[in-house]
Image (tube, rainbow, N blue to C red; front, side, top):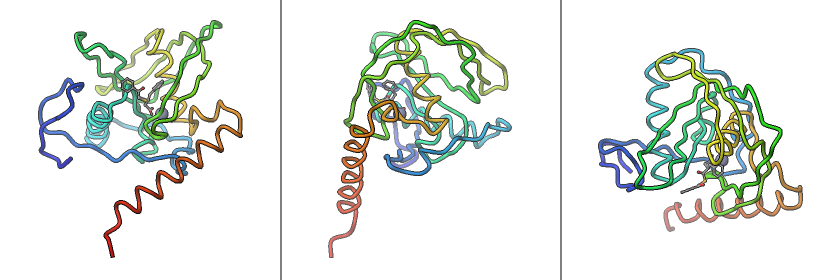
Length: 195
Ligand code: K1U
Ligand code: ZN
């Protein structure tokens, strides 16, 4: 969507100009990279966070990490409020760190905007405590449970170059990777001008 257009997504809490960034599709070396900490919060980081929230709501998704839009820095956005009657809760986490994990685990069928239409059960700690820097430079901590806990771990994995398919057997991962290679070939062909 062109910059300056009005948000079309019913799930987005925003109305006004939006900028969508293309989401990288696996396999891509940028999705396997350990991202660098954000050194300072300047206008380019604020713009990146804004664009990522627009891109996440438009997809639609419940999370998005900076490497998924080709920016190899430790920043993620998420909003796991799924119910349209509930108030949205857009969150921006800069340099997030998991400072505590529960012994209890939880299994959730995960998806990924960089691996479209593929889902698999992943086991992770059911609860985590995370510390991060906010957009205004403060430090926050929160104890996440349920889908929020699953999502924040999935997104922090992205910042460490890890995808949910890395939790699967190599046979299953290989099958999914081949499907994504085909998807990328098909998309490139569809985008190429006809001769
Ligand atoms: O990181 C990503 O690729 C986003 C991903 C986050 C995620 C999903 C499931 C478990 C853990 C983390 C997604 O948002 S996939 C799309 C999705 O789950 C969804 C989309 C619309 C409504 C509800 C969920
Ligand atoms: Zn993902």
